[in-house]
Image 1 (cartoon, rainbow, N blue to C red):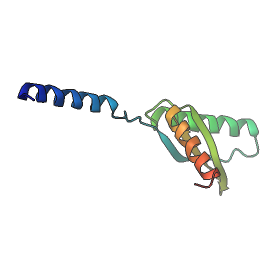
Image 2: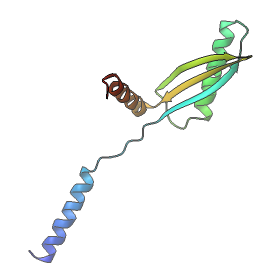
Image 3: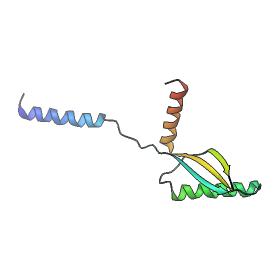
Image 4: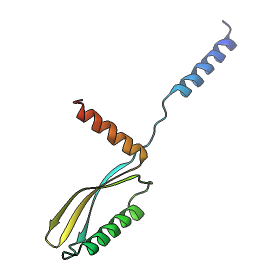
Length: 107
């Protein structure tokens, strides 16, 4: 084969291999803890405080568009309610489902 044909073949192989290379997708999953004051038994105040705390996190601490915001745990310690949140985007949600399915199936 001539040198020009080899160069063309090599260039074609490189382009085909790059096109076949899987594209990495960023999946975001964040677990974050926040706290709010105990509302003194008033459910409406507790809901408002929780909503405000979550909104603050989503506006100031998360740099992606979440599709999942889940309260994983909440505990009262003294005069504070500590809340563990799980926040994920669409790809992160898929990743969590895949991991959950693998755990359920014993992998």
